[in-house]
Length: 230
Image (cartoon, rainbow, N blue to C red; front, side):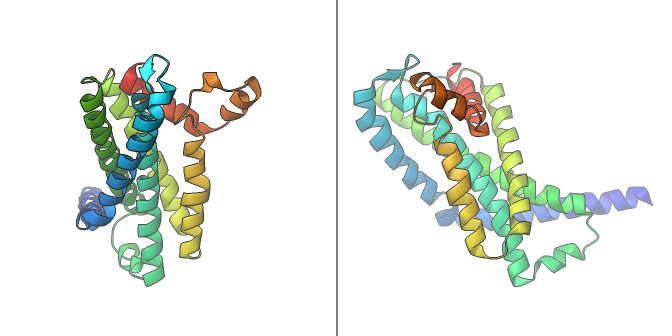
């Protein structure tokens, strides 16, 4: 009997995951177009134009230095947004009851939403990395990824973490404005002040100590190590 229940749970988990993944894949103009346009602008303005004045940071061109941080920004934002919006939209329109009354366990439900949201985060992060790599290659030279296994593992952990936080956010939100506040006024500022556009070594000791309280600093630096080995 337990084997049958496990099979039902696995089938439900895979089905719900597939539904959530197809939900964002069916609308590429919403899923991939905004990060594509936004990051082309980031790389053009910050990486190319500002990069000519900045030169290098920690021995690498500025455009290459900001690449990992922009990947983290896109990955965590999309992971969090996908999970929180999907959960809250289901609550708002009351179709989440179909999931809750299914034979799927609560762990399976949460796991499906988290995995689908993390998948979106990894795909968007990969898109941003590709954009940056193409621009860097065109302007400088082909740049190999120094620690690909470390990079992929770190990106998976980050997206799974923020997808899980997105599930919590979707359950806690009382209206769509709450989701906007969580993403735009809490999550994104944490990433922007997470050493995306600057090195901690360039800060005063006080600002450096304050920055180290921001968990995004460690995530950005972890992804940067995977890309650049620094």
